[in-house]
Structures are given as structure tokens and as C-alpha cells.
Length: 575
Image (cartoon, rainbow, N blue to C red; front, side):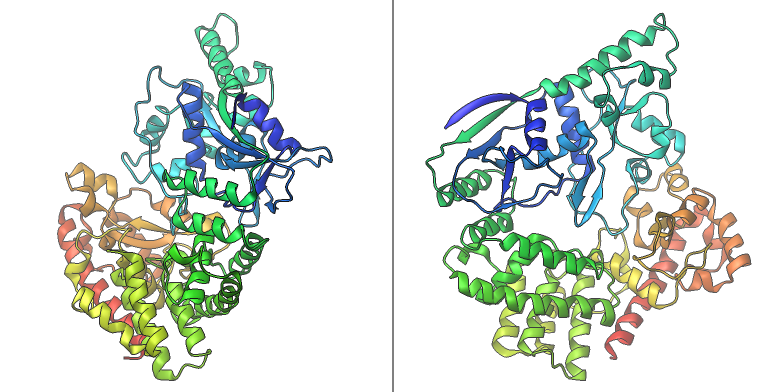
């Protein structure tokens, strides 16, 4: 195995020229912008950031497209990128200003650089976040950080100014000391950048500091990665085994990624088939991870959900499993949207629910009695709210449910394991105490309030996660403002309870900001009527809106929410 040291600038050029190709065993591009931000910060500081693994071969190996369009090159080599795709795609996007294609849509990765960043090591902790978006995702890093710490715009800006790199937002981009990283790499002339930073003369004491920092930023292109190149003599099967072993040793890939690699080495163009189905699901506002599609194949090929049998399962059996999985998943999405009112996957406490629903579709051949429909909906709503697949061994729990379905086809029997797991099925007000947006009960609260006719407090729009336009995206809003509660010494968990959350649009959330509830709720009643509050289970007694009576407010709203959530389940399941 050869080893070379190659600068980032050279690797990015190889990427763009089409000299690097992506084997089908690789997963798609998944990094969020915050991961790119942290990578740039590490490179800027000269920190280690891993190595690159390639395979140079003349063997006709199935490939897939990168997330960034490459130049056509008839004389391109056959270098396949086995490890480093996420980093090189991110760096190519930022250094060249190229958009990346994610889930059928092209978007830029816009990172800002702080010319006034503090010297020395980072003064903040690196955030370890999921690659998946949250149900009500912040529009940018600035609004995301508004949920943690000082609510005032000045407080948020002060927090951002301690960073060297941030995900771009309009507010920060307008500040003189913040500059687009792509813009810096797009020119060798600092004049325009320094002019925006209000540097008017060489005598300005900031001139040399800013110039040095821009030079250091551009030096990221000279950062050298250790590149390991596998021998040409190796076969595709052997390289796949190396790929699996390399990624099994760390936490880089999930078991579903490794299972997909094992399938792809025996099933050419599988990845393209999965991605076509992903796009179909996106048309219904459902995003299903590749890993869940791989698991669906396993479920229908083996009637259980563990990946350990993938390598020994015949390809023909896997292909038949995929055929069954597609039909089952279509039913699952339609059932979730039309029967349960679950508009997209973000309202599921676990994506594992789609496999149980898909299994019902195939076992029953899409012929469910009215009683079976109601039983399935009752199980789904209760198990989702309780977090059936969110605690303990998720695969073990799903296998328990799949065994019931595949062996007996008895849908009502699905509720028995839920009863054993949680004891009671109904929601009590005490269940909501200390529970926040990460609780499975949060989604049930949204569904129950939506069904009760809850609307945005200013525009009057009904609740939906599929509204058009960023201003109308549904967000959660602290009814009693966070900053006022913090000032009175309340703990974070108590402040961020579900019982202190209402569902409104992002635009309304900004307009309300941190106004006293005793002020803005009166205005809402005057303009929208009391139903605007009662439909969101908010007490209409003005004395309970006072910040000093917050715990009484929580008590009353917990009671109202629990009652509404139980009513919602009874109404939907026709109990």
C-alpha cells in the first residue's frame, strides 16, 4: 500500500476534474453545515483531521455521483475514494463555492470567518450533533443559538463573536468583521474584504492582523492529508472487505452503511435504486434514510431486522425483499400521513415504526378491517408517544413486534408488549413534568393541538410542517419567555417543558420575542379571540401568565395538555 502526502488544494482539484470517483459502496453526503464549520476550524488551527483512503484500479467498478458536479474528463484516472468523501466534498463546496446536492436539491455551504476571532485555543465546546435535521429546525446558526443562553440579539452576537467560524446567517454576514470563506478563497486580493471590514488605511492597527489571518485561512489549501492508496492488484470484493473493516474499527459508519456496502458488492446499482425510492418518498414529505431502506430489505428478506445475516443471504432473496419493502413502505407513509396525521418523519419518536407498518401492509395484502385499522392506529399513537423504540435495545423491540406480525398477523396483539414495557397507556399530567422537545410526548402534543384546531397566533394559519416559505415554518415558542424565567432562577429543564411550549410560525415567534406573557397574550385574545389560547391548551386566566406564577401556569397547562392528548388518541382510534 502506497502512502502520499497531498495538499487539500490538490485533492480538491482532483475532485473537481473528475480524477476521483465514488464507488457505489459509499454512502451519500450527509454532513450538516455545523460539521463543515468544525472541520474548517480544525484545519485553520492545524489540528489532525484524519487520513484519506483511495484505490487505483482498472477494474470496472460500479460508481455513484458525488454531491458536487464534477468536470467531464475523458482522460480521468480510476482513483476511487474509499474514505474521506464527507471531508473532500465539504472542502470542495466551501473552497470553490460549489453547491452540494442533498436529497435532490442543490444548496451552498456558506461558512463565515471572523476576522476578529479571539487568539489562542477555542473558548467554546465542540457540539456533537446528529446529521439529521430537527423537526422544527433553526434557519441558521444565529437563530439556533437563540435557544441557549441570552435571548437578546446582542447576547447572541457576543456568543458568536467568540467563534472563529460559523454557519452563515444574514445578521452575521452584515457585520463588518465577518467574511464568507468561499469569498476569501475566490480572490487573492484582500482589498474588497478589508474595505468591508472598514479598514481605510495601512496605518489601521487591524490591517496587519486581518491580512495575516486571511493568509492563514487560505493556507488551509496547503494542509496535507496522508493519503493511503490500495494496490491495483486487489479485487473489488477484497477492497469492499477492507472498506468494511476500516469503518468497523471506528464510529465513522453505522451498521446499515456496512450492510449496504456488503449488498452493493453483490448487487450492482442497488444504491441508485434506493435513491430513486428516496426521491419518491420526498414527494410525500417523508425523508427515509438509506440505512432504513437497507433495514427494510433485511426485514422482508429475513423477517427480522438485524444486519448480521446480510452477507449470507442470497441476492435473489434480497431483491425480492426490496420489492416487498417498497410496497410496504408506501403503505406506511400513506397510513402515517392520512390516518395518523403524521406529516413527516420528524414526528416519529423512531424511524423503526415504518417497518412495523410496512410489515402489516404485506401480511394483510393491504386488506385491513375497520377494527384492524383502528387497532393499528391506536398502537402507533400510543407506542410513538411512549417511545416504544426509543429506549432499551431498539432492534430487539422491533424484532418482538415483527415476530408477532409475521407469525400471527394479530395487529391488536402489538399492544401487549407496550403494556408490559410502560404499564399504563394513557397520559397523565405528571408524565409531562420535566419533559422537553426531545421527549416522544412532544410530537403527540403537536398532533393533539393541531387536531384541536390550533393556529398561528398572528397569521391565523393552521399548524402544518409543510407550509411554504421560511416565515411560515412552524416552531415551538416559550409562552412564558425563557430569559425572564432564567432571571428568576428557574432551572433549564423546567423552563423548556412541553407545558411551556406553543406552536406558532417563525415570523410570529420573532415578533413576540421575549415580551411578558401578560402583555402579548392579551393582545392575541383581543385580535384572535380566546379560542386562539384554548386550542393550544393555554390557560385563559391572566393571573397565571405572570412570570412569578410560572409553576402554577405549568400545573394548569400540564392538566389541559394531558386531557387533550388522551382525547386525541381516543378520537383517532375510535375507542
